[in-house]
Length: 85
Image 1 (cartoon, rainbow, N blue to C red):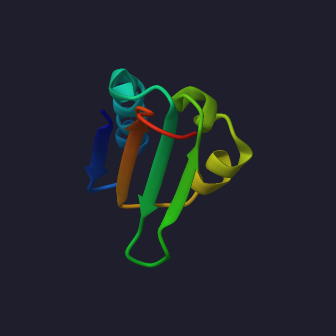
Image 2: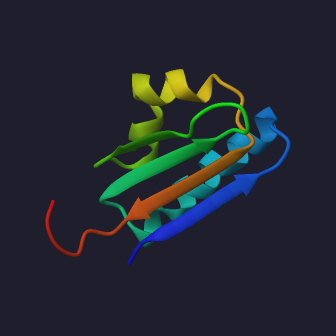
């Protein structure tokens, strides 16, 4: 079982925080890995994923560097491992 969350629209600090909170809460749908896709009309999508809980992923340099850019879409995924790593 896995979980998906997302936000599309005007970028603001509040919208970003809401997305991160949604991904934190969604961990009940899958605690084994977390992924985020950041989408923009003007740049290629940025995908960050790791076998970490959401807060641990948020504290990685890769995530911190990516979130500094402006995006209009955020997609998040929490994975519940059923087979494999």
